[in-house]
Length: 306
Image 1 (cartoon, rainbow, N blue to C red):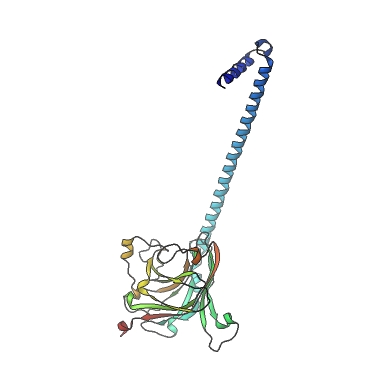
Image 2 (image 1 turned 45 degrees about the vertical axis):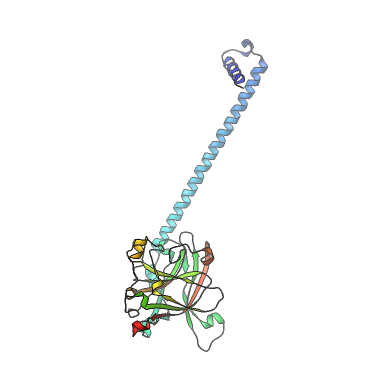
């Protein structure tokens, strides 16, 4: 192969400087060389064109991706800026009366629920909470009408992944600083997803906050019946924007009931301990959810109360 290439190269040089008829090189060899050169040039041209096309396509794809990313980021920024947090609080839904506590009252313990979902960070999830009566669910009027709180909506994991409702706590519901003195008793029914109960001092417990949100998992079933469950406040764990910090930071925080100013319910990508909420108990991509709450009661340790 090497000698043939050298010979063809020599023929080429010779054909460039002398007339083929005078070179002494047989015409059929020169014609064969020219054909091979022509074929090689066409192949090179084809390869060059293909590379250029690939490069252009790659550049176009990169440009398109960058444009799409810019549009997505812009959309997320607009949703974040336009999120009406004050409006959500103004349009709070009054539902349920907090029972129990250190100094149980009547009207003063009514809870006003406002939504706080991932729109606050530019997400697309939506919360639709409302009061529901027996008539709404059964279609028949019952002798004793019960009004419940329905926490429902749609989760969209594209750019977010949580929905929640919050209500301010009456100042008289906790009188001591010991978490082991209190528990929260719920009557609820769900859709098989794992929700969370939230407690906080009202500062929201963001990622840079020194004050956490306190959370405990609320597993639900799909059988459609009402369930009662009691959650000790000592079970609640600190969370900063859905995640837990290091062990040392975790250990230095303690839940002081008398500092709690807000209660809430959340469906999130993460469980209370910061681990992922599995698809089986959360959902995938875009999906609806619904949690009904019939009653909330604060139970105080009877020994402490007396």
